[in-house]
Image 1 (cartoon, helix red, strand yellow):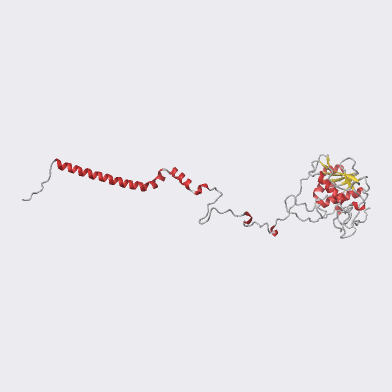
Image 2: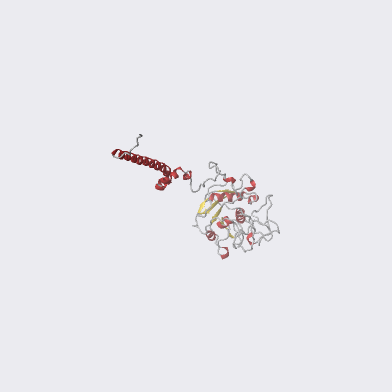
Length: 344
């Protein structure tokens, strides 16, 4: 007879069942641990920025190349090289190439503005007559004053004080010329804003010009002391009125004059010229000097010799040119005296 297995009951069966149960629990725990480990490894990179946002943002900012850019330095576009040099400003759109002379800037004057052409304007206004003869009387209104105030003003006017202290600074020796001749000196009112030495150089150049009174033998040499026989004084308008004894309301603040051995030059006229004179202030200064020195040498007033002719330097050009053209010199370059009919 074959033997049949009999179920095992008792302690041995219970021990076997407990061992199998423990093995299943151990295997389940191991499997769960392995699964959790795998899930944790995959989830850490995604969960860490959420759990630690400040740390992650600082780490990304440190690693990002944009962290070193300033607000004025835009990020390069895709496909561009950020290391390329900046564009040359001279080649920027709208910037002319300075090597092309046709694009050169327009010349400017001393104030830094473009020079404008002088527009002639010759309104008529009466002028006081000057007394001829060296060292005698007073001559107000030398034909180079401006009472009307009309006409084109300079594009950039310097600051010109109207009043001053009435004291003067004598220019140092600044003119090279003949060792002999009439000694003259130049004085500028304190606070007038112009250099006495520069004024002396300009007046000396006018006196020595070949179109000036040297054509008739008059020579001049600059001095700086009281031995001067002729003194040029550049004064404010208020001081000029006092020295020239200006009383007519229409003359106040506007005219130059010769009084005795002094030629008083109105600072306003020295700096601005006159709208009635067709020329720049530097040429107008020559008219002031030549007209007053002409009186000092004994010349009287003259008038226009004919239409189209140069106005005589001794003409009161402020009264109107009467058909003549503006002129600041008593002689032309060929040595001919630019005269006109004498004014009674």
